[in-house]
Image 1 (tube, rainbow, N blue to C red):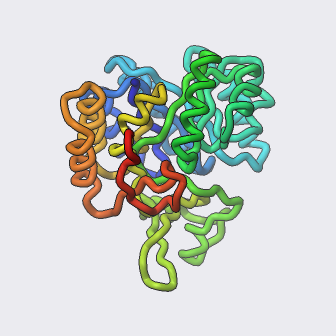
Image 2: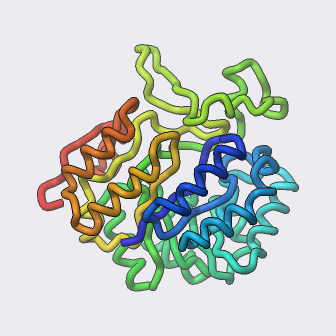
Image 3: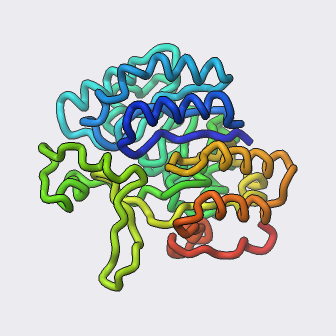
Amino acid sequence: MRLTIGPILFHWPAEKKIDFYARIADEAPVDTVYLGEVICSKRTPFFEPHLPDVIARLERGGKTVVLSSLSEVMLKRERDMMEAIAATQGHEIEINDASALLFASGRPHRLGPLMNVYNDETLAYLAKRGATHVCAPPELPGASLAILAARGRALGVGVEAQAFGRASLAISARCYHARAHGRVKDNCQFVCEEDPDGMPLKGMDGKTFLTVNGVQTLSHAYLDLSGEIEALVTMGVSDLRLSPHGVDMVAAAQAWRDALDGRISSVELKRRIAAIVATAPVANGFFHGRAGHLNLAPAHGS
């Protein structure tokens, strides 16, 4: 089973991203790294000039680079961005918004978790139009993921699952992050940069239960499928995605690699992940078909 590093969802400074990818290139035992702005097109110019050097560094480190696209397309310049990435030569692309299918249909491409491929018939339909790989939505129950993985094997399509990191729950046309600071989306002054792991959102009971990242709503708890690793292997998931956060992602990747290679148990993996996250809860409820914020014991036999 391959390990992947998903695209950075947060608005980190370019220098921080460069340092992050340098360390991933040199130290992280992962196979694939997804690069690109997924959440807000306004962030793109900050890092785009550095992409060629970062790609070269990752490839020297033996990583496969996949270029990820926007999850929301509303403006002409964003449509132009989608058309440009669909025309990319030399690297695989990951589509996160259906508008890109207009340009990519018939060409090989990957589908990201925000494309919401919930069932095997959808997978088969999109595979006929060029999809070679799909990352399942993080809210998909394990039973449904198993069906996707089986159909993916029959079709020769890779099926990836997010195993670590806050789960994306919604993308909005409005930017709550800006509104919370008394600003509007068109004049946000990139306030999301002040929250490198997202802005905690509390309910009326005073407890944090969501995280805001620009136009994106994420879970507060970190999705952690370490207790389900045997089930993921058994069902034939091809890749496990680790979503980047401001924690030691190299240590997280190493822990997952050690478990997949049989050097540590799933119990030890779960202990290591909890220690890496430390300041936030972990959860796996979606996998078990329950509320996503729950942290449940693995089902019998998994």
